[in-house]
Length: 579
Image 1 (cartoon, helix red, strand yellow):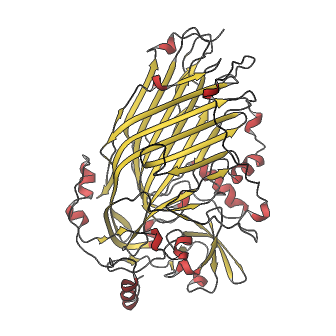
Image 2: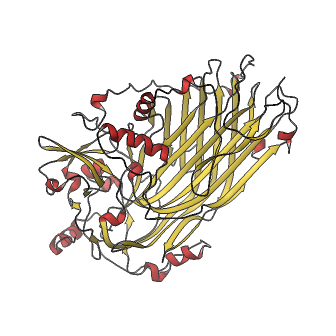
Image 3: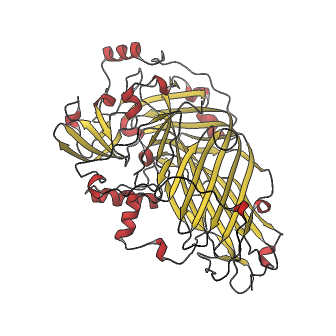
């Protein structure tokens, strides 16, 4: 579907930047050593692309900031046949819900009468996807959207970009009731329907690593069963109560102010009911903190407790256990390049390069109080849609950032403290390339700044542990939250920290740090998240969605670092458990 020529000319005149044209782009300097990535960024591969430029969120209209930018025409761009294309879609939207999946659209807006189940709606960069459900209430349409591929909305188009990233120049959209968020209302309702409660379980921990395919698998860890600490394939450590030791004041975790968010009533939450809570207003250049019942979290860019970068802050407290954690990919003069070439029916070329990485760190402090009842087990997506807009392409693509994480604690005694940090220097670029049915990807070189096991400390009468994994995904795409789709590259980092009992005859600390990169074109959400989202959709009588819909995806993860340390060396075979 093409826009009429006169509309294209008018849009050029009214565009935010004077870039509504097509031009050749010289091959940028590519640092990657991967031959496929070099080919995907070659002069021949990038020639003739529509050139994008960094957008300024402060120049967006009120409706563009609230709901996203509408699709525009551009020479050489053809939209897919049969989609519901709303060229002023931001003005047709009346609201969006706090679940991140439901949109309220003016039923009298142009093309609104074409919206029906199983059609692809393209109203704005965030209000885009396959229609899962639509209900009419007077002059409003309530629409639930699922994911749609970039090839579902673009029939043909070639898009290139090569500019620095201003870490202050983004739009942050919060969906505090997104079903895929850790410990969300939907997750609680799903657990209640299964009659399960983590507080009724004995304290336990599951140790996992991320495999080359991106799956979580049990890992070998430490147990003290049989009288001596040793490595085993274990899913939980037996609890050890009855003894307690004082927790030094210097190691006590700070209490974060703020109460719990009230539990939402069904009649005002699920999208098939008349009232839908409005989503919080988007923010320009500031990241809102998401406050879930037992978890506070926010991405950070310029306030990550150190140099600027792509970071995530978490604070969680439940069942007498608390954790405060920072994970940050530090950036020095960050810059982004991409090359996306869509031909009818397939993606010909897709390449992303994020440069400027200077370091990576994970720092945490965790504790089990006297009232300790259960360990923490959080897994899900941070319900924030962070986007750096790109203008001049016609299609309102954005650099989108997503964080999915897994956090497990393994305290086996009350009044315990565990803290650690992994600190690495980084160099090179994070990139992916796909061209002529070939894949390539590479990541930064990682060098530890200090001993990992030496940075683990704690106070406890039992063995304690923490496992934290974070998937930081960079995508050039369309959509919102877990249903965004497009070429992406993911950096997956996993830290495990285990500390022997403070009263053991032999002290022992063990740490592992793994980092890898994988890439794809499409969308992918963890099955655990997909299960909760589908439970939520089932309450609205909406058919389920798959957990992934990649057009193509790398078969193997590229391993950047895989470190395991013990102090003293070999102590897991010699240390004695507390008597």
